[in-house]
Length: 581
Image (cartoon, rainbow, N blue to C red):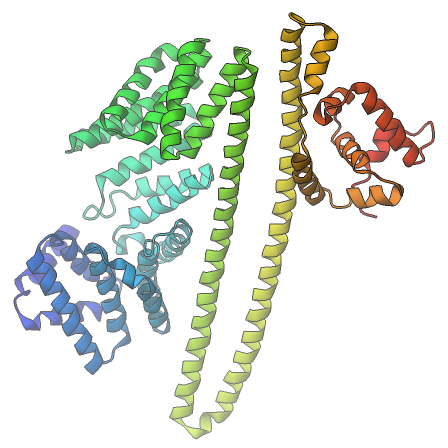
C-alpha cells in the first residue's frame, strides 16, 4: 500500500511540473496535520532525490520554491512556512549548497514550536541531526526524534531505521557498546517497516557495528553471527568493489574472533583474504586493521618475525593517514615484540609512542564529552527561549483581545517572571553540577595519570632489570650500576608535570606535608610523593636517578623532619597526608 501511494504521488508531482498551478500540490500536502503528514511531505523529498542529477528538474524545483515563498508572503501560514523551509533545506543538501542553510533549520524549529505538533518536531529533529554535520548533535537530535516517533508510532515516519543506525553508530564511537547493540537491534527489527526508503548498505553498516560491539565485549559467537549476516546481505550487492571490500571486512573480523579463541589455523586464511581485499580496494584503514590482526595472530603463535613485519606495515600506513587507533595498536605490538627480543631501546621508544598517542586519544575523548554537554545545554537553551517566546506571544494576543484580560495578563506576566527565575535557577544549578562533574573528572583523570606513571615506573624498572642482566654479561656489577644510574627516569620537566597532576589528584597532600615540616625541600617533596605511591626503595632510586643508599639517607632525613618516634612507620605517616584537615 505504501509503495502504491509513493508511486502515485511521485507520478502526480512529475506530471504537474510543467504547470504553474503545481504549487497547489505542495500546499495541499503541507497543510495536513494528521499522522499521514510525514509521508505526504516525504514525496517531495523523494522526487528531489530521484531527479537530483537532471538540470531541468533542478531549475523547476528552485522555481517552485520561489513561487511558494511569494505565496506565503501573501498568505501567511506558520505550518506552510515551516514545510517550505524544510523543503528548501533538503533541496540545498541535494544540490550541494547546504552550508548557507545551516542556521535555517534552527529557525524552522523555532517557527514550528507554537504549532505544538510533535510529529512535525520529530521530522525537524531528524533533519537537524545531520545538518550541520556534528557527532554531538547527530546523537542528541536522533534520540529526540526517536523519543517522539516511539510515542506516535514508528510506522508513521520514513527512514526510522536510519535514526536507530545513527544512534547506534554514535554510541559505538563513544565506547558505549551495550547501548550501541540495543539501538542496533531496534534498527534491524524495524528493517521491514519502511521498505521504500531503506538502504541495503545501511543494513551492512549496522551489522558491522553490532559485530564490532560484540567483539569488544568478547562475545565472539554473537559477533560472528552478525558478520555472517553481512556475507548473506552482500549477495544482493551490485557494486563489485563494495562487495569485495565488505566480504573481506566480514571475513577478517570473523578471523579476529577465531584468533581470540586460539583457532589460528582457521583464522589465518580469513585474515589474509581481508588484507588482500583491502589492498585491492586501496582502503588504508582496513589495510592497517588487517595487518594488526595478523600481528596478533602471529604473536599468539610465537612467530615473532612475521608478527613484527605485520605490525610495522600497520604502523607505517596508519601513521601516514593519522589513523590513531591503529597507530596505538601497532605501537603496542611492536613494544611487546621488541621487549620479547630484548631490544630495550626500541621497546622504550614504542612504549613512549603508545603512551603519547593514548593520552592524545584520551584528550580527544574528553573534548568530545564536553561537546556533548555543550550540545545538550544548547538544546535546553533553545527550548527555554521557545517557551519564553511563546509565552510573550500569548501575552500580546491577550492584550489585543480585550482590556478586561488585563488581570489575566498580569497573572501571565507574574507566572512568566516566576517561571523565568525558576528556569534560570535550574540552569544555574545545572551549570554548577556540570562544573562539579568536570572537576571530579579532572581529579579522576589526574589519578589515572598518576596510576599510569606508577605503572610506567614499574615497567621501566622491569626493563632496567633486563638491561642490567645483559650488562652483567659484559661488565662488572659496579659498571652496570653506574650505567643504570646514568639513565634517570624523572627530569625536572617530568617532575613539574607529575607534581601538577599529583596535586590535582591529592590536593591536600603537599599542604599537609608543608605544615608538618618547616624546612621542606623539593627533594623531600619528591621522595614523599613516591613513598605515597607505595614505590620500593629500588624503584624510587631508579626514578630519581640515585643510589639505594641515598634513598635510605633521604628517608631518614624525612623521618627526622616529621619528628617521628622510633615506633612510628614513615610510610604510614605519609599515607595519611592526603586527608583534608
